[in-house]
Length: 327
Image (tube, rainbow, N blue to C red):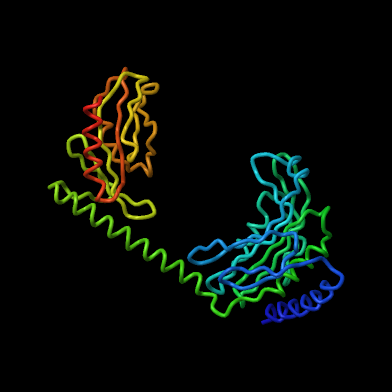
C-alpha cells in the first residue's frame, strides 16, 4: 500500500512537472505504442514498435549519434546515446529487470545510488567500440499498470535530476489502453495456428512414410532405408528431417545439387569426419546414420537433406536418385 501511495504521488508530481516542461523544459512528443497505449518521450528519441512475446512486450525509444559522432564511434556495435525502455507485462508480476536490462545494454560497472523508493537511480559506464562514457540509469516499476520503465543517458548530456525528470515525465504520461491483453491474445492465436499447421504438416509426412511401408520415426531415433535416413525431432516445432547419401567424388570436386534442397559434404580432417554445409542441429541429424559406414579419406562424400512438406518428398527422393546418376 505504501508503495502504491508513493507511485501515486510520483505521478501527481510528474504531471505538474509536465505542465512546466510544456512551457520551459525539454521538448517531448506523444508516441503510440501499438496495441498498448500512448506515452510522451523526449523529441530526440526515435519511434519504436513493441517486440511481443507470449508473456511480455518490450519497447525501446533510442537516440543514435549524429553522423560526425557515429563516425568517431564506428565499429561492430551501433552506439545509442540515449534510450528509454519499457517492459509491459501480461500479468502484474514485476517486470522491471527486463527494462533495466534493455536500457543498460553495453553498460559496465553498474552501481545503484538510490536502489529503493519509487525511482531507482544508478550510474554505469557505457562501453561500445572501444569508447566509453559515464551514464545515468534510472528505473521505475508500476505493477498496477503492468509496466516498468528505465532510462539511460550520458552524464555529459544530462544531470542526475534531468535524467529523473525524463523518466517521471514519461511515467506520468503513459496511458495504457483498456484492453492490455489483446496483443498477447493475438500472439497466442498466431502461435496456436502455427502449431496446428505444423502438426498437420507432420501428419502428412508420417502418412507419406507409411504409404512407402517404412517404419514410423520415433523421437530422436534415426530410421535408415537404403541410402536414405530420417528422424523425428523437436526444434521449435515437431518435424521430420530427411537425408540421403548420393555418392562421392575426388577431393576438391564439388557437384551441383538440386537447389530446392540442402546439400552437404562429409570430409575427413585429422582423422575426424566433419560435415560441411549441413548444420548438425541438436545432434539428432539423420546424417548420423552414415557415420558407421567405411569411407575413403581420399574422397569426399555428398548428401542431400530436407525437412520439406509431404508434397515435396517425392521430388526429394527423385533429386537424390538424379544426383547418384550424375556422380
